Image (cartoon, rainbow, N blue to C red; front, side):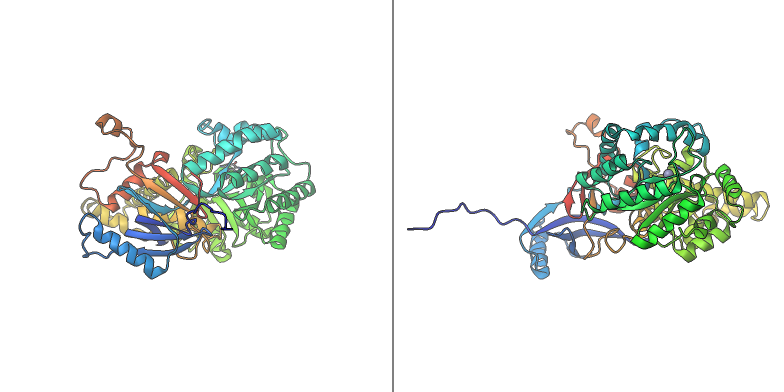
Length: 499
Ligand code: GUN
Ligand code: ZN
């Protein structure tokens, strides 16, 4: 008897190969453009190789035939098997996934409203009443999928989320990150005082118990891309007992910690009243054992030199949230000073303090903030006649870029949005750029999106217009200043397509 005839199935691809322009950071000011580049992703979602297809001087050949030959040759050389090739369209590039180091999921519900109040009034008027609604599981099930989906749509492959005080609702947030495929750190917010309107946990021990339950719940999701993060809201709303308890939990379970620090002058003054024995705001966290190399402090706008030194020594990271700092009139953070002090810095959207879920919006606001710092400092020196007026008139730009607080550049804000964020969250061994062995978290940015017909009116719907004179470098710069979620043509987390 002859064996049964099975229909031949094509073998599942074991390597996905992206061919096109690759852009990533290898350091703060070192943007690497690999064009044309070839990047392989293995079946475990890891980057298996990154190569340049041809070097400058080598011709593109006839109708890409030569490129095709070079590609085959390259794939044979790297031993890629079962290959599926994805060619990037022209005017598009592949970048590492964007990293949002600070964002509040429940606040998505009122994003874009209420920016007339400063921080402490904003919290009691809008934030706490809105977060209190998450005692309803149904409310969480309505808001959280929308918040996480929006974040992914903007190209954010990793987010450090704040939930609320509520255990069931914050579990929903962690489950949502798992089901939608976003890499995430999720925190149940802890606060045992100064909540306002009854938005506060009954005691420090109650907050710690709920936190332990939350850690267990997230760990039992068995999602290697979703982890718990300890989340004392800020020292204003946490007692010493609570902060010390959380520090113990952090060291017992090797957990990351996220909180707010030095965002607004009134908040800093409140901290001085609440903690008269601590030298300054950063020291409050240090004195309670919360300042580790796995701690993320959001904002840090108003730091003394002693505070920057302490952050550099402890290697705690800062989430710079420029959109929020503008929206809540908190101040303008001098990021150059933090970087020069060897402090880890990433970007945060801080929704709803910030009005946008987009890390691209955070990138360009970081550029604007750093320009404001630069010219404010220049003008202060001018007012003191420390710079002769003629020098500014004749050599203004030179002088400006020689200053210690010279503005950030496009490559630098891109670093903050990717590798810098990964360093702040202590995941740079895993993601942040295109180094073989790292997991493949990436975004295809397409400047010809959204798709249009050929009419000029349709083309006007695109946030970015590409002209013949544009180069890869100018297209990248245009994307940073003009791009938005319409340019996000695909998002991958650990090799899995999620948008
Ligand atoms: N400080 C304490 N809580 C918050 C918050 O929810 N948002 C911002 N921007 N700052 C805070
Ligand atoms: Zn915040």
